[in-house]
Image 1 (cartoon, rainbow, N blue to C red):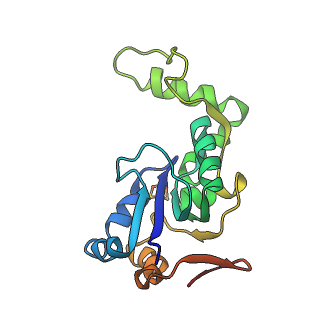
Image 2: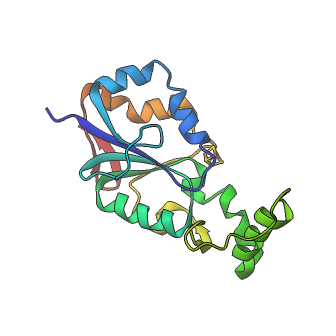
Image 3: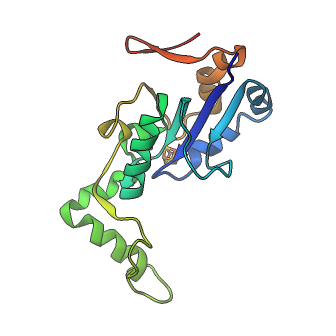
Length: 182
Ligand code: SF4
């Protein structure tokens, strides 16, 4: 039987959702016996691969790099899970949306000038900071999402409940709008 191909992606989030995933502790060893982790910030893999069965997406979509990778992830993945409140609602990263159309310039000014202790200046070199989107978006505003796992972060026992069926080799699939395994 083909092994299940699992990925996790980190967009605009604090990494707390991935920390909660790591809180699965020894259960990760059981999971590793059944599942190949084919892309993740906790593994040094540069290119998002084809034919991924399930991807946990942490974070909101904040910049052009997020947008391009998310589209690639969608095209190469059967089941996407919005993993945590930043992915589900945009949550903390979307606070800048309240500042209106000038929010991009405001956050760069705050980060690189007002809050900087040294070398107060905006980044000038092209591409050194990914282009911020005019508005931070939850994942489902950009691509189709099959499942939502809210929480800030989702607790480990709820992550475990989601991935548990994969321990018996059951592959994730959609039945109507419901995520099923088998
Ligand atoms: S949902 Fe909470 S824990 Fe997860 S990335 Fe966002 S702020 Fe961090």
